[in-house]
Image (tube, rainbow, N blue to C red; front, side, top):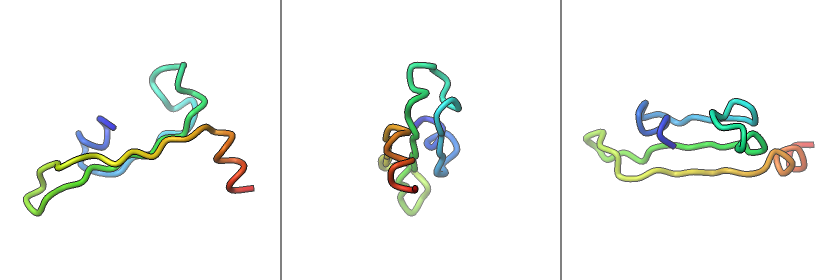
Length: 58
């Protein structure tokens, strides 16, 4: 979520791309919600287990 906020753009991390090994079973997407001036109003996060990702796409 902080990557999305810092870059003011959507990001996705899959499995072992996470900084902490304890999160390597997750796939996460995050995007900042910006106002018309580019200020961050909030953040949207969608995280799920890698098993769910393979179930949905296969």
